[in-house]
Length: 583
Figure 1 (cartoon, rainbow, N blue to C red):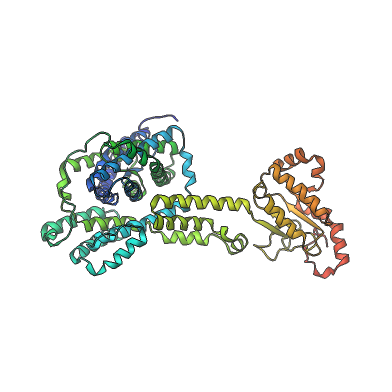
Figure 2: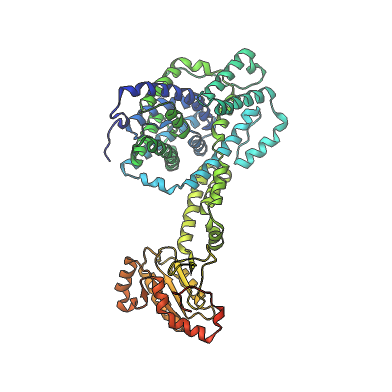
């Protein structure tokens, strides 16, 4: 991997500068309040979210490959951070904050090492349905975790359902001023997103919340506020932790890295496709790793690429990472001179900003679309694996809701791999029939029942590679078909079999001999080059004696066998199949 620097600035044009500056200011208006909010999701002081941004934006601009991607604290990785750090430190304590910073360093090291080892392909193991289910479950968990702050009631720890039960129990203790502030903040963000999406709704809600506290003295009425935020730049250096804690955080950092990379890479690729340039998964790993290192070394939290802020960046006219550098500079200005403004920020407003930010991630429509993707005939044939994408999404979502964030992600990955293995073990074996009005075109009768099937010579097609794991399943299907009354031969269409192994070749040879003992012939049609070559090498030319170039030729060769069956039985029971199918 060639490690060039500032890739997005190559070929920079002066006329891009205005758009990059405007985009940077726009993203800053969104990033500041969201960083404060996401830090609360991670269980640390809001200022930790601001500490994370400048170094992360700078290092990603140096090492990343996307011109548009904006990195910073995000809800998914913030929630992951909170759950992971809670295993080594008490939430709300100083060691918890230190461990949160250390986790960012661990994620950064993991990203840089993975990039140098060119492990960007690992993102392929998190499928889109798994990520969709994971994000839906995570969004629901985040929302229910913010509801107590929105209502001014005590928080309950536990999984999603325990938190939901706690919220229900506390309904009688709602603090009305807090609830009003939270609902108004939520309405501002969601309302502006609908009627004026170009306006920074989060920043406006934050401004309204701060003004309300200052003018109405809501803090004296029991409305919780952020409180003191130390001005100035963050301290630099490694967090002071013992070796055991570092070692405990390191394995979980890999999971955080995968989640962050999957989300950020998706956003980067979307805008690269729009503007016709390339992003590289390994460069994204390096950029994400460097960004997390910079965040951790400046007392910040885990960061990753943000789809929402990248969308704001692109819509505002960004052409390069100059916009990210502008955001970094503005965050530094905020830390130096503007932190006092945010001290009066109501916790309920932060909760409203968080809920509004993740509400759109509860994408029920996408889950419904995944459910509808399987057509009825295929679902009837394949059973549970007919909707594998929907099942993996639901597994990931329920895993997050019941078992927590990282276990939920891995549960979704495991379920998708198990279903993949099941589909490999039990491939669809279609029964083919002649398409009416044609002389040699055959199709799956499960999809098209009007296709004409000859009862004496059924035609089967294996829709997968044949290998040791599924050979026995295919053998069983062929045997069952051959055992039907009046069957004298079976044609196995190999046109959809891209490859075979020695176990499959031996199975076919044994199956041919087994059926021959029952006076049933097994013939193959449309074998591909690799299949034919391996059969010839393993079985010799004799193994290719009953192999035909297509199904039509095979059926013509079997015409005498079928005619004998017709003479013995009632010819009227045979389904008409056109002139090329023996009658």
